Length: 111
Image 1: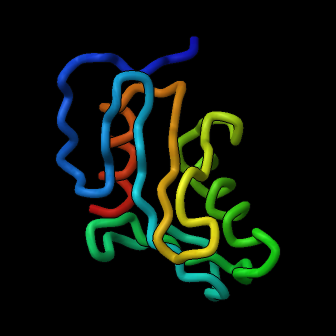
Image 2 (image 1 turned 45 degrees about the horizontal axis):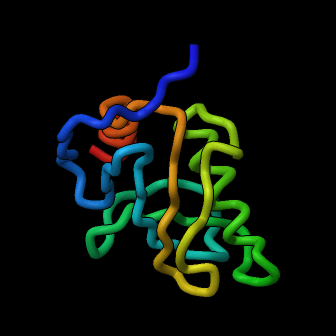
Image 3 (image 1 turned 90 degrees about the horizontal axis):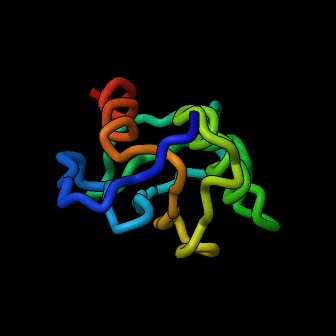
């Protein structure tokens, strides 16, 4: 069964999550060319990700979406990079999963 975000006034406790009416925004700080792909904490109010991919030809952006997809258990089509295509600081839009579930998953990874 596919879950969707609700339009309630849910306020996430994690600083990198922003809830909108129909989606969730995730602020991400990317460290490319790392030794392994991992979500490793919070950096400047953003979710910190280490990625093995280089920041060339969109490879790090693609790997960012792939890792988020895997960790959240959603399809890659549910995630869209909307800001930061050429920056370490990015904003990703997420649809098709409830915000409380997203927060629970991230708390299990970084806390």
